[in-house]
Image (cartoon, rainbow, N blue to C red):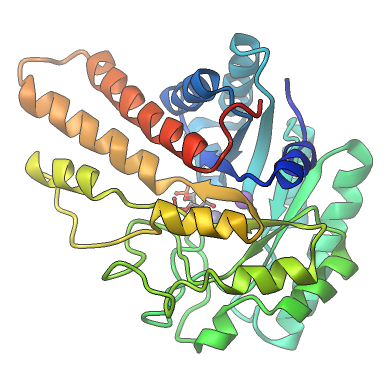
Length: 328
Ligand code: G3H
Ligand code: 13P
Ligand code: NA
Ligand code: ZN
């Protein structure tokens, strides 16, 4: 059944686990996630970015999720809009049946200035006023997702803050988070603790200097009733990088957020864990391998089947590691 983000994350908070939120763009990704959830008895958060809507089209996305719910009637499913850029974009998603929307008011370049903060509060509050009366949950974002190694913002859905910021400027401030939640009424808050989007998060395995897991405790203590969201949470599996390289891919040395660090984050209060890149890497690795090993093959179903299988394995590992298995 389609449920709200609030419902799923309230349960996660009560029992102290985290829920992976996987980005979806096509049928094989939706199927992989649903099959992994069915196999592990886990609740599901499917999220669609603006890029996903552009790729698949609104009607295809909506009907793929309806098909998922019809095929797996016992699995609770949240359909969440990832990184909404404006209240009108969120309103469109609500009309199209999403049960949760993210208003990312931190996307503006001046988000770290007082005017940028006020803008973020204003647009996020407006989205809560539209969404809550119709039972739709809202995620906001405060802080700047980006690398503490370089001081550079990651790929904020293609838009983002340019230039360099200090560590303290990039990380979410607990007291500001409290003010933001009081003023907006968001159900969930994306926090900045040193993660960034995409495959190139860290040039070496992250230490406490560049991945501020401890800060989660302070933010959670300041806003205990708001569910914390960790974006940029792909682990960038070295095994998949090796397979991609072995079969002709060119991806330079890079590291993601280790699963054990995410688990420490969940113990400190993280409830929603956003993952896109890991599924991309697994699917690409599996497709490269299939076509390399079977050069006469030209049925795309063979490659997509291998990709779906690889994505399902990743999803199953995350459901299990985050304590989500058995919670559907
Ligand atoms: O937030 C970033 C997600 O990975 C979505 O990426 O904009 O390429 O769909 P996308
Ligand atoms: P990754 O790029 O680490 O998978 O993060 C995805 C994300 O945060 C989507 O909002
Ligand atoms: Na999101
Ligand atoms: Zn994100």
